[in-house]
Amino acid sequence: MRARHDSGDGEPMLIWERPEPPSRPAPSPLSRERIVRAAIDLADAEGLDAVSLRKVAAALNAGPMRLYGYLSTKQELLDLMVDEVYGEIMAPGPAAEDWRAALRDLAHRTRSAALRHEWFADLLGSRPNLGPNALAFLDASFAALHRAPGLTSLDAALHAGGTVTAYVIGAVRREITELRAERASGMDKTQWQRASGPYLTRMLATGRYPALERAIQADDFPPDPATAFASGLECVLDGIASRVSPES
Image 1: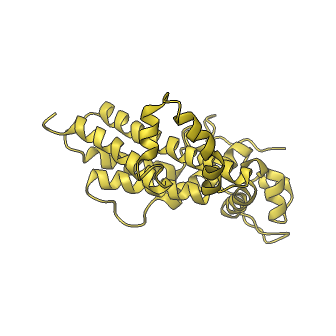
Image 2: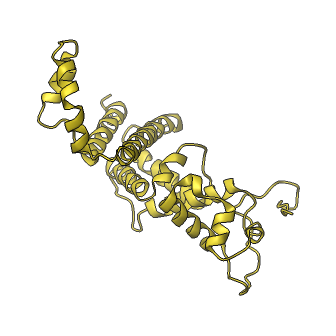
Image 3: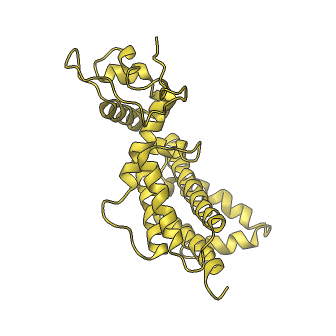
């Protein structure tokens, strides 16, 4: 039977505030940290659909019911996993003073974390995460935006931050979706381009897609994923800068 958790005044306590049960050595020691680490390892190896309390418990040589002393639902486990990855994203040192450099660093670190943990992209933006690492990430983002010249209102900061977040989530999800499709097809990008090249050549020869033809003929099309991500991010930051500059 799952235990109820409240703050004493009837308000439910979130996983971040609930104390862990006392440690015991047998049959195997448990902690939220070990549970989350095992769940992340499982998701990294087999995907998010493979994560269940039963499988995590088996990886820790523990009965599933023991896990309920540390968390109540699978959703809480997913929240803990997401927050652990946010902890990887946060740089250990002080953030850059320049607002663009600080946001750029957070965005690239988010992409790197998602490429290490592809399941993280599936959960990004699904619902607000209130873990301490996720809150630190949001705090760092707003701190950077508040250093932007001319960006003084909370509403403007929310819009600017939301725009950067939307770009990062969309770009990362697209990149990982393409990686998964590549693995499923059994062809790398070069092989896929070789296989689809004759068809594309015939379609462009119809003259119905002149802009696309010019883009494909450019030397830098298509750019590698890292370059494409960086270029798109700079477009977003340029847009924010144009709206918040003192001259605007």
